[in-house]
Image (cartoon, one colour):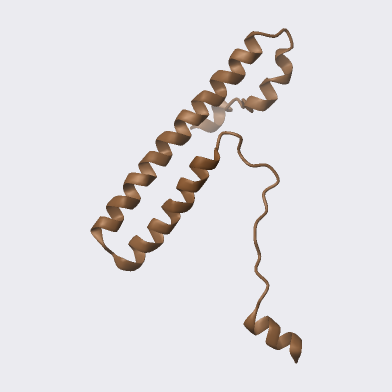
Length: 105
């Protein structure tokens, strides 16, 4: 009975724990993403145009920030690979995967 009461009033919460976070996502970008999520919830619940405008503005900023961070990441790793003779250890970090030309169509 006690367990049932505890489960009703304080149920277990399942969370996703990521083993590796993306090295390109900085703490600043992560904070913006959390803020974007809060703005989205607010915009959906209020259906206010200004809330949607704020959400769209921060969404576009995050997209640009992620693209810049991704470009910086690849630029730095490619420059590091060029400056050393052991390029084999840098390519796995870049996760370069070639597309199968047959799967493009």
